[in-house]
Image (cartoon, rainbow, N blue to C red; front, side):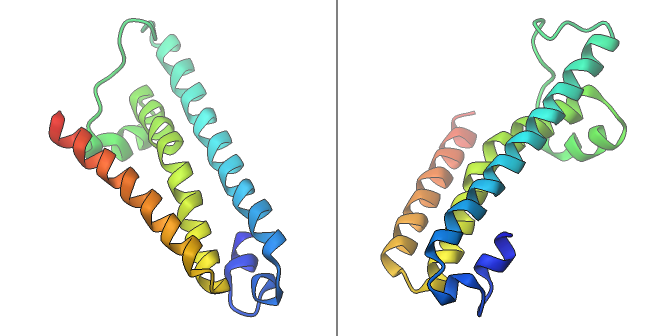
Length: 130
C-alpha cells in the first residue's frame, strides 16, 4: 500500500517509481468512494426526514460537522462527504510529495509544494471573500 511505497527501504527506495503512482491512485479512489458513500447516506437521511435535497442544503458549520455526523444528522454526512471530495486530491498530492521527497526527486517536490500552495491560496481567498 501507500505506506510500503513511502517508507524508507520500501519499494520506492529500490527504484520502485512505478509503485508510487498506483498507490496514490488507490488513495484517490478510496477517498472518492468513501466521500460518495457519505453523500449518498446524507441524501437518504434527508429524504427519510421529508427534506428535499433540492430545497437548498444545510449550512456548513465546520465546528459542528463531526457532532452532526456522530448524531446521525444528514448535514453531518453531507458535509463530511463534500469536504472529503475536496480534500482527497490534496491528500494525493501530499502523498506524492512525501514519495518524491523520499526518492530524492527535488524538482517534483517543488511542483507538489506549488500545487499545495495554489490550493491553500484558493481556500484562504474563498474564506476571506465569504
